Length: 138
Image (cartoon, rainbow, N blue to C red; front, side, top):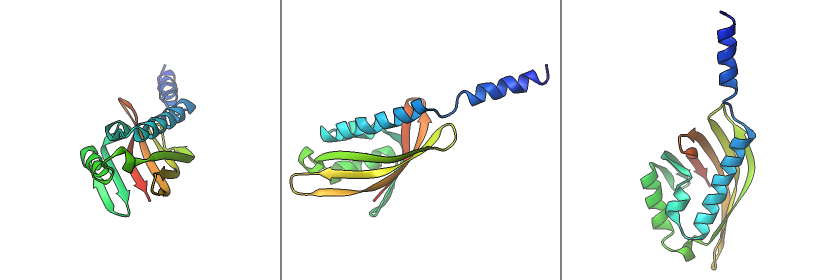
């Protein structure tokens, strides 16, 4: 009996780990963010971020979902300014059971120009699903 309990606990813990379904869920959130952006829906885009998000870019660091949202609203005041967003995901790498790193490229096509760069995102499994807790965009 002493051996059976630890083996049962190990089996339960190992069954709750990161899986291919988690990667699909993360990719789905990113696709939903692209769609929201293309509709001019910054609040919808922000649904992929955790409340405790910290966003890092060449302009500096911003932490907190409301502060990051405010920055997006200021930088992209209209759907025309937002343009069409496309992500290219190069890697989704699990980091334990409840975190993952995602690395890739972003491209923003607008009538006047096209912007692009890269990102690495730290994701965390939360009660509402996978959410971005750190965004390093350049």
